[in-house]
Image (cartoon, rainbow, N blue to C red; front, side, top):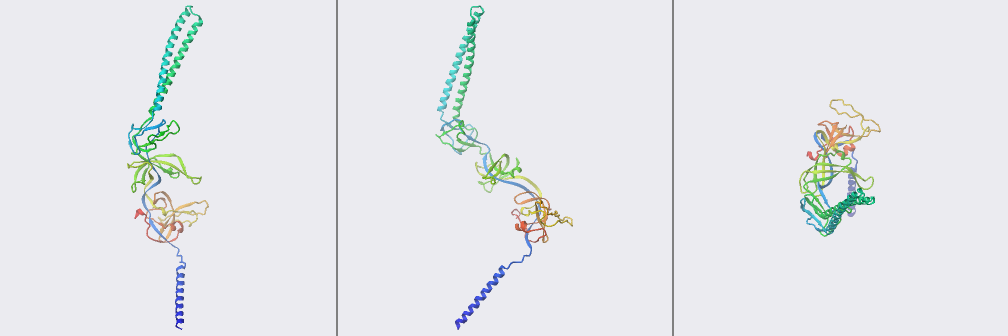
Length: 426
């Protein structure tokens, strides 16, 4: 009997517990009644300075860089420099084994000497031919020489004159061959054309190199003046029209964190480059050269981010970028005419299918949102210039994102929270 009472008591406890859980679940998952009020943040319209910036990535390169390639082929027998070494203009960089070129020079010298001797010989023959012709001519006039002998002497003179002329050209030809051989011999020794630093050394002592007279030749080393550096960045085809020579640039180098360097646009490429595979994935870009004005221990190939100041305006009406959104023209509230001085005018809305989206902001007026069509100007990372549609001290809705871009309409009820502050305003 006692056990039966105990079991009944536990059944009542379990029953009340289940009922409590069911009531809690109903209360928890009961849909909340939509009050129609949208919670927003506001921002007061003010005047400020705005600088429009184009951001691009690239790499640092020397302004002046020379690739050293020998003009003649052969084995490197002297290489007194190493990578990273500073050299002055005129310093020895490398020497190629000259044996073959010395032999060629000696052969050309011998050929030149031989042609000169031949030239002197032909001049002697010419003198003899001239003397023979004068004697034959005198005898012919006196009737002591036949006409055939006279003509033979005349022909011999003309032949000698042509032989002297041909011998003269042979001397010039052999002289040119000698000059070429001497030049090839001189090219076996290479001196520095500039003062700078050896930024790349691609060959070793004893290695055979190919001269530029044959194909592209071997690049033995690169020389660069590291005191003058530039940044080569790629700009998209959309932004390139805003880039001008002498625009100011702020540079961030990955190797120098928390530092910014000054620069200036010096060159703008005219030829486009494309990247990516496939017709739809290709990106068209243009190379822009930025001269780095600050001096630092930069190295060729360092990654850099350039912030190019394309346009600046001072004391203009501006709002945070997130305040501006778009609505399809002709799909919102009907037109409204201002009834009091200073009241904003809402442009008439029509149902035309040709109307495109228009840029708008929402004003916070009492407990309602008011849609205003605006004309925007330049922008920076946080603010956008408003050319038409707003005035200072207007209260614009600046958040949240969902409310501005999806929920708000002209006349929507709003509940104002704290003013939305951007990082630079805090």
